[in-house]
Image (cartoon, rainbow, N blue to C red; front, side, top):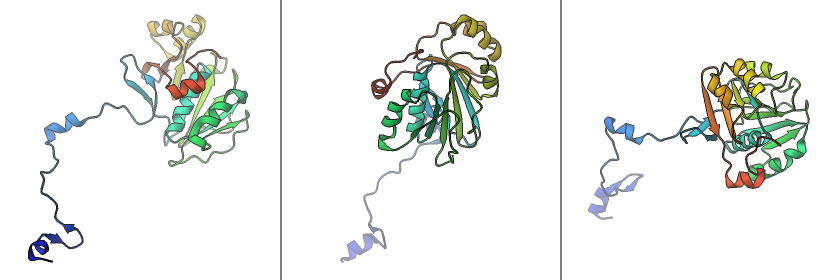
Length: 240
């Protein structure tokens, strides 16, 4: 080894590479590096301005969602939640409506499981393996054996505003409402304390549009299927 080479070598790191300026920015320039993304979670559609609407469904605290809407939207939500790494347990009395989805999801990995009503076993949810329980149990779903807990969210699908809906909506952290009748819209407006304009809009919503509500916020969201979702589930629809 020559003296020159010896001078340029470093023990354990080989030869010193070419000298370049450091990749640094000033404090004033940091804001320009911001990325146009929302919170972590599942992208459920776009808002009125076309921005991604994200639902953070995997949480360290119990999280319950009530969706008064169609099977199509519930299945898109389940499919996208599975894509984020969650395991999906579907409690349903119409397993034939979920079989194709369960078989296609996960690329051969069993990420969506189907269970008869009242027969969902303990899921063992954890931070590394979050669970979403989708309850598709008709107008009067019985009280579930598996409830919301840390890293285990529960989504209850109601096709219409049923007698049990007010109780479910009251205990839910998030409520989604798709197109309903004017009478149902009026009842939902009173329960959720919606402004008159939003209450009236509930009876005219297009297929794939959902009003998502919390105690403090409301947002209309359009869910558009990807090509893969359309091939599996068909186009957006309110009725099944």
